[in-house]
Amino acid sequence: MAAALNILIVGGGTAGWMTAAALASVLKPQLGRIRLIESSEIGIVGVGEATLPHIRYFNRRIGIDERELMAKTQATFKLGIDFVDWGRIGDSYIHPFGAYGSRLAGIPFHQHWLRQRAAGDPTPIQEYSLPIVAARMNRFALPADDPADVMSTFGYAFQFDASLYAAYLRGFAEARGVQRTDGKIVDVKLGSEDGWVESVKLESGEEITADLFIDCSGFRGLLIEQALKTGYDDWTKWLPCDRAMAVPCENEGPLTPYTRVTARESGWQWRIPLQHRMGNGYVYSSNFISDDEAASKLASRLEGKALGVPRPLRFTAGRRRTTWNRNVVAIGLAGGFLEPLESTSIYLIQIAITTLIDYLSDRNTTAGEKFDPRIVAAFNRWIEMEYDRVRDFLILHYHATERDDTPFWNYTRTMRIPDSLAHKMELFRTRGSVITYKDGLFLEPSWLAVYLGQRVMPRGYDSRVDALDAAETAAHLARVRDNIQTALPRMSPHDDFLRVYCPAMPPATMTGARA
Ligand SMILES: Cc1cc2nc3c(=O)[nH]c(=O)nc-3n(C[C@H](O)[C@H](O)[C@H](O)COP(=O)(O)OP(=O)(O)OC[C@H]3O[C@@H](n4cnc5c(N)ncnc54)[C@H](O)[C@@H]3O)c2cc1C
Image (cartoon, rainbow, N blue to C red; front, side, top):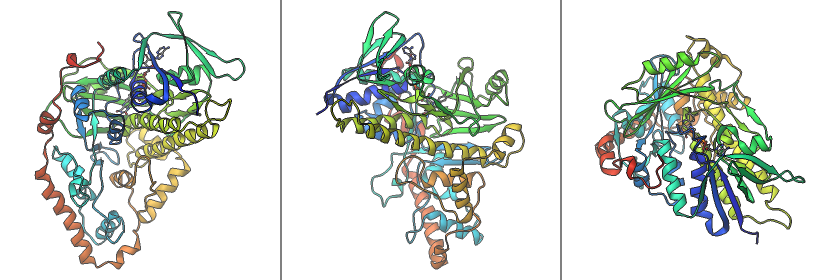
C-alpha cells in the first residue's frame, strides 16, 4: 500500500480549481493534504466561456449540481457552434452536439443521405439533426433518456462566465478541505540528485513541500517549464493564430443556445451569450493583422454596447513535450493550448484530471518509487493523443476552405497539413468514410459537420447502401425529418427555459466569490 500523497496545486485559474475540486471530492480519503497556491497579484486568464458536453460528466463525477452551477456562473445552454463564413463568405453551418439521423441496416446515416443526394435530393444534412434545427429556432429542452425518442439524439454544454466558474469551484473545493494560500511563488527548489521538485518558496518566505506538484500556473508553466525545462511542441505553422482581443458587450435580443464563430480577415471572432452579457473576442495571427487593427475590427463588430476596452492575450498553439515530468503534472495552459475555436481547453483540463485520478487511485508502487513509470508513460501517451486529435480537427477548419480573399486564408488553405489529417480527408473524399475512435473527442458527427459544412464533398459513398430499396431509404430519411419536427413543440424558447431552470443569481450572493 503506497503512502498518502501530499499534493500542491500551483495556480487558481480554471485548471487549478477544477483540479482541486475533483481531487478533494473523489480522492480525498486516499490523499494527504491538498493545498493550492494562487497569486491575486498575477490573476487568471478567465476567458474560457464555452464548453463541450463532456463537462457534464465531470460535474456528475465530482458531485456538482448543474442548476446551481449554471445559476451562479450566469450560464446559458449550448447545443453546438455556428460557423459563419468558413468555407466561403456567406456560408453558415452548425457543428451540433448530437447525431445526424439514425443508422439504417447498420450503415451510418450520412451514407444514405449521400446516396439520396446523388439521386438529386437537395435536402441539406443539417435538417436531419435535432440540435441544429432547435438551435436555429432558439429552442431548448433537456435530452430524453429513452434511446427510441428523437429527444435522446443530442447533448448539451454550457456557456458561462469563466471567472465566476473558478470562484464557484473554489467554494466547492474549500468546503471539501482544500487549503488555499494567496501568495506569489518566487523560487522552486529541485532535488540535487533526481531533479524532482522538492518545494516552492513564496514571496513571504514560506517554503512548501509536497509529493506531487500540479502545475496549473498558466502559460508561464512555472514548474513544468521554468523549473524542469520540459520543452514545448510549437504548432503555429498549422494553427497560426497567436493572439486574441476579448471584450464583453451588452446582450441584444434573445440568448442563443449556441456559440457563434465567424471567420474574419485574419482569424475569427467568437460570440458567446451569457445571461448577463455577451462574450466576444477576435482570435488572430499577428503575422497578418496588427493588435490595433484587430481591436478596432472587434469593437466595430459588436452587437451591443461594449462593456470595457478590448483586452489583449497572447499564446502559442502547441503542447508541452511531457505533461507528467518527474513529480510535476501540468494541467491547463501550463500543459498546452490549442486555440478556442472548438472550446476544447476545459475538456483537455478535465481529461487530464480524470486520467490522473484514475491512475492515482490505483497507485501501486514498488519500494523507492513514488510513481510507477509505466503509469506515468501511459498518462503522457493518453494526453498526447488527445491533443493530437484536437489539433487535426482544428487544422481542418482552416484548411478546408475556398476563401482566397486575404493572405491569411491563402496561407491556411495552401499550407502543408499533418499526414494524419491528410489521410483522414482523403478517406472522406473517396467514399465519405469518417475515421472514428472508440472514445475521446470529436466523433463522426463532428467531422461530418465540418467536412460538409466547409465543402469537402465525397466523390462517392458506401456501395452497401445501394442494396437497399430506394423507397425504403427515402422513407427513412423522411421519418427522421418528421420526428424532428414533432419534437420541436416539446422544446421551449431558450430564454424561457433558463428563467425556470437556472435564473442567474447576482454575483454578490455567491459562495466563495472573489472581488
Ligand atoms: C483567447 C482565449 C479564449 C479562450 N476561450 C476558451 C473557451 O471558450 N473554452 C475553453 O474551454 N477554454 C477557453 N480558453 C482556455 C481557458 O481560458 C483556459 O484553459 C483556462 O482559463 C485555464 O487557464 P489556467 O487555469 O490553466 O491558467 P490561468 O487562468 O492563467 O491561471 C494561472 C494561475 O496560476 C497562478 N500563478 C501563476 N504564476 C504564479 C506564481 N508565480 N505564484 C503563484 N501563483 C501563480 C495565477 O495567479 C493563476 O491563479 C481560452 C483561452 C484564451 C487565451
